[in-house]
Every structure is written in structure tokens, then in C-alpha cells.
Length: 373
Ligand SMILES: Cc1ncc(COP(=O)(O)O)c(C=O)c1O
Image (cartoon, rainbow, N blue to C red; front, top):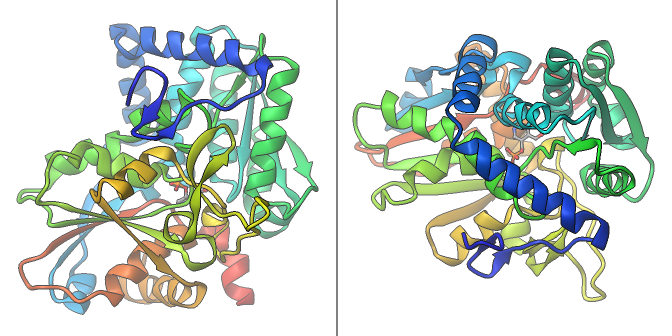
């Protein structure tokens, strides 16, 4: 990444004038704290004692038998609050505290990032507002209750498809109203510089732990891709390990890397789903966290470098993998993570392959969708 936040031709910062200075300050403060010993000690302590890291790397014998190779699950579902989102939320909330911000705002789709942001805001005693599309509010009601219990205000967004894209728009707009006192805790590796870098750094703990936990080098790393944070967190520490193949799994109805074109969305240049008139295309996925028309710029860079491969899985296959995991492994995975499991179950493997799947979150939030479905 260069100083302006470009990963090759992707990334950058395409924002209104009012956000130029707040982003510059954020980048400078992050640069200062990322190397700060006390900051990193505090982050390490919270990650371990509060969030429950390191998460286990579990050898799934049943999935291994099913696929005919060795399959491991990186159990981010066992993190406090139920998903990888807490890794980033703790890091950014610590930054907000150091920057003396009195309010945290966040967007959420599946509600997992909203819950993580509300959790760390409660922990640090900072007021929290979460922007969420009306459609997501109705399909992730359990997480809405959790956020309210944690003391966050939920701001319902009624525009457009009433999902994550509009929630990000509304949060960015709110930030322009009071950047002085407000910290925007962005939940994925998207948005203007420095967010893709900050989120990647805080999520890279996933891949670093896998490196320590696995005895032989993995041949394949597989993770679902919404905005791209759990996948970049797993992939990034393996970037130079050319013998390890990196596979991102998008939702069939929201495949920005698979079907998108280069464009600008939410302040950065990446692959985006838009039509011939330049209008953002409405997406669909049974997994709210994947239901997004853009993707983090570093993934766009990985794609163009041919360093990572991006595949697609539809709702039906994801739901089938979800049910298989529940009945065969006794694990209820998030519908987002079920996309990664489904791709691994579908693919042909060699006996010597060693596959690590990022099980990004747990699926209690999705029980309504699954039971209806
Ligand atoms: C459990 C879970 N996995 C994956 C995602 C997708 O996000 P990302 O691609 O940033 O990891 C989400 C988003 O809400 C999620 O809740």
C-alpha cells in the first residue's frame, strides 16, 4: 500500500471535503498508536482475556472424511460476541478512547459488527449509535435486541434496498455532521484510507494465529467475503507464502469481485456492482453480512495480482452446508461462514491437501432465517 492508501490502482480516499481532515487525523493517530507498546499491550490483554483469543484451530474429522483431505476450522465463532468482528472493534474502540472521542458510530448488516461496536462502547463507557437498514433490522432481530441491551441507539435506515450499503451511506453522512467528537468505527476493510488498512491489521490476528497453530503449511485458505475483513485477516499473513492458495467465497447474488467492474463506492476504488447507467445494483444474499455491492480494495488488488481466487456460492448450497454442519459437527455456523464451508464441500480435493476454513461467526443470529427457509 502506498502513502495515499492505494493497493495498486485500488483504494484511496474519495470523500467530501468535510471528511478529508478527520481521515488525515485518523491515519496519523493510527500510525502513532500501531507502534505504541502500551497500546499493543492493552490490545493484546483485551484480545486474550476479554475476547477469548487465541481461538482454536479445530481439525474437523467429519469434514475431512467428506472432502477426502485434511480440513481445519478457525473458530472465530467462539470469540466473545460470536464473530471475528470483535477483533477490529476492540482495536478501533481503543483508538477512539486514545483520541478522546465521546461518541462511536457504526454501520451494520448482519448485526455482528453492531453488536461488537455496542459491546466495546459499553466496556469503554462511550455513547454508541448503530445505523442499520430496515430489512436487516427485521431479519437479524436477535442482534438488534443485543445492541439495545448493550445501550446502543439503533438508527433505522429506510433508503434504497434498506441493507448494508445504505447503512454505510448514512453513517458516513452522520460523521460529516460532527467529526470532531465522533469516531466512525467501520466494520469491514472497505471505505476510504486508512480504514481498509486499519481493519486488515486488527483482523490479521486470525492468520497469524493459524500460522502458529498449524503444524504443516496449509495448501488452501478459504473464507467468505462480504466487505472482506475475515478473509483479509486470514489471508494477509500468508501473502508471501506462494504455495498456499487463497480462496475468497462471495455470495452468488452479491459477487463484486466475480461480476463487478472497477468503480468507487463508499470512498474507495474497488470492484463494484453497478449497471450501465452507473447505478449501484441491488444485491441479494440469504447471509446479510455478504449482501453488499462493494468489496475491500485490497481484495481487488489480490484478484488482479492473481494472488487470490474468488468464487461464488448461492443461498441453497450455503443453507445445505449450514444444516450439514449442525447435524454432523454439532456446530451452528453463521450463514456467512456457511458459504465458505459450502465451497469446500463442493470442491474436489487431493488427499494431501490441507484446508483451513475461517468459521467467521456463529449462527444463532440466523435461526429465524433458517427456520423460515
Ligand atoms: C459472521 C460474519 N461473517 C462474515 C461477515 C462478512 O464480513 P467480512 O467480509 O467483512 O468478514 C459478516 C458480516 O457481518 C459476519 O457477520
